[in-house]
Length: 205
Image (tube, rainbow, N blue to C red; front, side, top):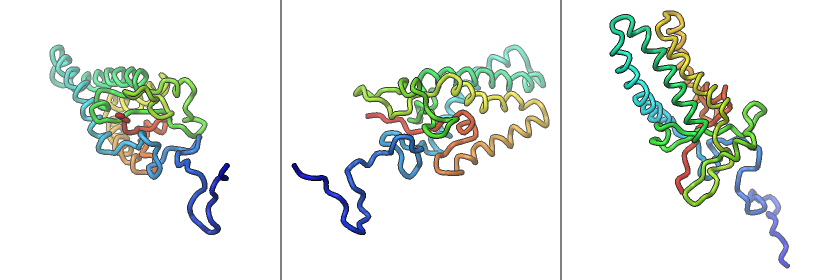
């Protein structure tokens, strides 16, 4: 029986043929798991625009039927925020995707490393499947607490818009939230970091 080939002295070639990510290693932009590459910022922006239109436009139209003028500016943001929180939390907990994220070809998964972000067995068991029946990565979809927290961190600042000082702080938060995507190698916004999630490209085959 042939013995395994070992790398030559001084060679940079690794031994073995397993090029996958070792269990427990964080998902990095430089070495994403096959089928689970990190989502591009443009994909995330597209998904957020689609979700905002899906939720925001109907809510504002309904609110305008009952209030107008200054009251509209006061009531509409909390109404949009509440609907956005429910819309996003439910879909992330069930499928790991909102309609906007489906459109953009991305999904939210539990961040696999770190004590506060480690994916649970239940989250791994809830991994979406491809058309061939294979698990979508090893990360699964977010648990209900993760989904609610992630949605709340993004949605609550919307509700604060009518309050002058808090509205200004909310605007600054959104700028910082977007900027954090470019800090580090995992492209995690503030709501990802707090909820222990990543946004990855959806594997389609």
